[in-house]
Image 1 (tube, rainbow, N blue to C red):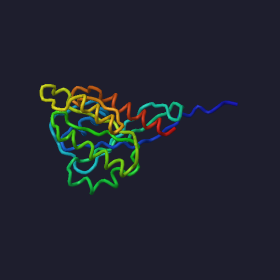
Image 2: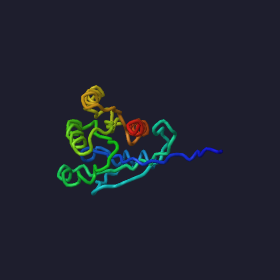
Image 3: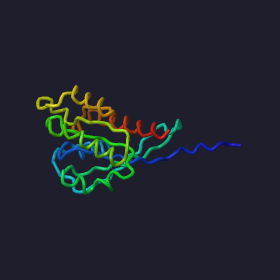
Image 4: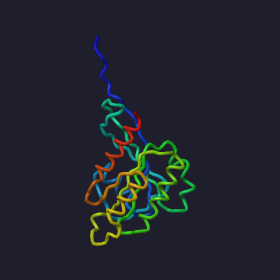
Length: 181
C-alpha cells in the first residue's frame, strides 16, 4: 500500500497595522514583489496580496498562503474598518516609522485594538525605515522593550533595502503555524 504524500496547503490572514506613511504598503511590495518605489501613494481602504511559502504545520511540511491585508492608516477609519479588517486574522505585523516617535507610541493602540477584536494572535513589531539612520528617533531598545511588554518579537526593517523584511514575515508565519498545533 502506497501512502499519500499530498502536501498540506493552508491559508493564513495577516494584517498590517500602523499609522499613515510608516511604510506598510512598501513592506508588502518588498516582501511579495521584491520591489521598492519611494513615491508615496496613500492606501485607500484595504488591499490584499498573497505570498506562498513553505512551513511546518502541526509538525508536517506544508504550503502556506499568506494573505497580507494592508489597511489605510488614517485614524478616522480605524473604527469603521476594524471589524471586517481583523475578522479571522491569524497574525499581525505592527509597523512604526523609526523617524517618527508618534508612530511608535501608537503601536500600543493598534495592538490593543487587534487583541480586542481577534484575541491573542502572534504579533511582530517592525521599526521601518532603518535605512534612514541619520533621522532615526526610535531606538532598538525602545522597540525591544515594547516587544517584551506586549509579548511580540520585533525587527528593524527597511522596505527600501529589504533589511529584515523576509525574516519578519517568516517569524510571523512560524508563529502562526506553531499556534495551529
